[in-house]
Length: 470
Image (cartoon, rainbow, N blue to C red):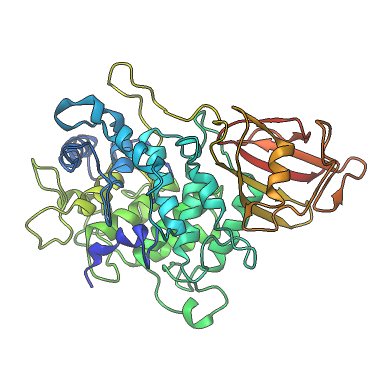
C-alpha cells in the first residue's frame, strides 16, 4: 500500500483523523537557511493555491485538500485571502464554512475524525470551530464521541488515532483570544490514554496498544509518533517529559544520515517526514539541530526541501517521483514552515476581512449543541454534547443542565440538578451536593472557575466546564 494514503486515514472510513503550534521560523544556525525556508514557503503557498477549485472549494466528497488550510496558515497566508481568480466572494474560508454548516456534511455515517479534521482546519482558516453556525458546534460534535466505558478515549478505542486527534483538535483550537477552551481535567484524561499507548520503542501507531503487551512490543510508526508527540505537547506536557524524550529517541533512530529523512514504515517519503517534523515543531524541538543533525550534516527539513519542485512549489511523495502530490505538498509545507497540525490564522490582507468569523448568537427555534464537562472532584469526569433548542439569542446554565439530563450524547452526563428552577446557586449535580467550601463552580471557554448559578448566561458555542471543589 502506498504510504501516500496517510492523510486519508484522517478523513476516514477506517478513517483516522491534524497544534498550532505556529512556531517561529527556524534559526540561522540551521542547515536549511532562513532564505531557503522563505523560498520554500513562498513556492509552496503558490502550489497550494493552485489546488483551489473554480467554486472556491478545497473540500468535497471523499478525500479532499482542506488540510491545505493548516499549511497555508503556518506559512503566513490567511485562508480568506485565497480566492479563485481574485473573486473574493468565493474565498476559501467562506466556502468551507458554508460546507461545514450544511446539513449534508459530513455524511450520513460520520465518525469522530470528521469533526476533528474540520476543527483543526476551521481554526486555521479563521473559523471559530465552536461557532461555525447557529447549528454547528464542532467542539460539541467531538464531545459527543466520549467513551464513558473507557474515559479518555474519543470514538472506538481500537481506532486510537481518533483519541490523538481529539487531543490535537481540542487542545490546538483555542478561543479567538488564544485561551485554552477545554478544562485541564479533560486534557489530563487524554494525556493518560496517549501515554498508555506508547510502544516500547518510544513510538506510537494508529491502532490501540494499551493493555496489550504484544501490540506495545511492535514497531512504532513515524507518522503517528509525530502526531502523538504533538497531542501531548498541545495538552500541556513539556518537551522535557520522559515520554517525549523517548519519542525523540525513536525518531532519531530512524534518521537516514545521507539525506536527513526518517525511514518510515513504508520507506522514505514526504508525508511521514512532514508529520514527524510537525510533531517536533509542536513540542518546540528544533528539527535542524542536535539530535536531528546527522553525521553528514543533513536534517529532516533538508530532506523535505529536497522533495520540493522549483519553481512550481509542489512536493513529491517519494524521492523517485517526477510529479508533485497534493497531500505531500500540504504535509511538507506545513512542516518546513514550522507548524504543527493546525495554526493560528494570520491577519488577512484582504480589505475588510477579519481574522475570525463566528456565529455570535443562538437562534431561537434552531437546534444547537453545547460542549459540557462535569468533574465531580473525586476523579470522575463526564463529557457530553448537549442538544437544546433555544428560545432566544442566549440561554442559561440551568437550561443547559436541565437539557443534559435527557438530551446529552453520550447519555448519563447529568442525572439531575438542584434546584430545578430559578436563577440562584446550583447546589447539587447528579446527586453530589455542595458541602461547606466545596461547591459547584463553572468555567466558560477556559475562564476562571466561579460559583455556578442557574441564571448564568450561556452564549452560542460556549464550552462549559462544571467542577465540584473548594
